[in-house]
Image (cartoon, rainbow, N blue to C red; front, side, top):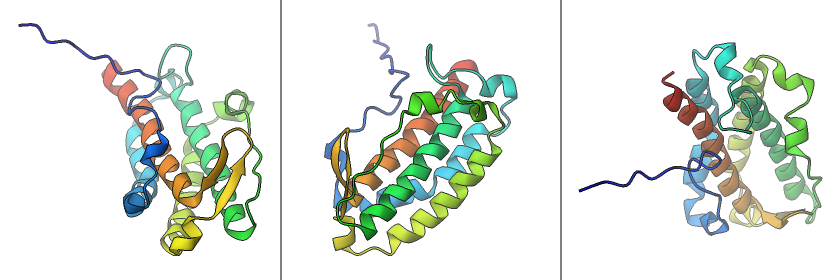
Length: 178
């Protein structure tokens, strides 16, 4: 009897985000996942050398260093998007070219500043989210590329995003025996 080995797509080690994941009944779980990112990310990168941090998580993909910096950039943008959604009526947010940002000179610097950014943003956002009413979770912003997003949809997406990129790092460590 042979067993088939299933290959995990290294681009999506935990699978793609799917809008069916948006579920107000899972809100507390998503907020908890989101709140744990700084700790889980710090554990994922603990002890990595500069050479290891400069290893792409897949052929043609970002390095682990770029991935950490991307997470800080994305989560900064997310924090601002939620602030706009909560204080304005259906604001249109400004998308950004993540791939271009990942190639700017600051993404070659040490990862500690980005980890500190994530610590602060996640502390602030977790406190904010835990204090919202059901009606506030239904507030929206509009992404010109993907349409309207509720605060509930945002937290489902960013809980996934937190796990997704952490898995890029942990799966790279596992594959390379680090």
